[in-house]
Image (cartoon, rainbow, N blue to C red; front, top):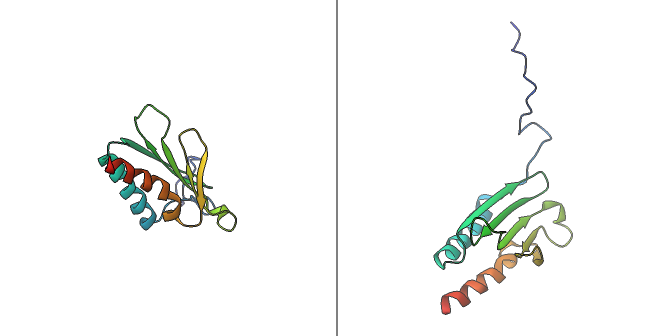
Length: 117
């Protein structure tokens, strides 16, 4: 007996069709920051996008606006300027680095200023 014929659909996880993502520790660190920013009233929504080249976490002040901050992981840049990038609201690169903690530090410092007020 032969297996049924395929319909031509492309399976998302075939060999060679890899996708960049966040590790559990990275995602926990990002979501911890997101939770603290939500508690401070700065962020209200988030989105994640995963492609072959990059994983992106975007945080929004309001759902209909452009993201206030984006954290991008691009492993191809690991040996150059670092695979982590913090991108601001207008698309400007705020920080690049090899470690996630150093890249999200400016957002955490801003959170400290918000809490102090």
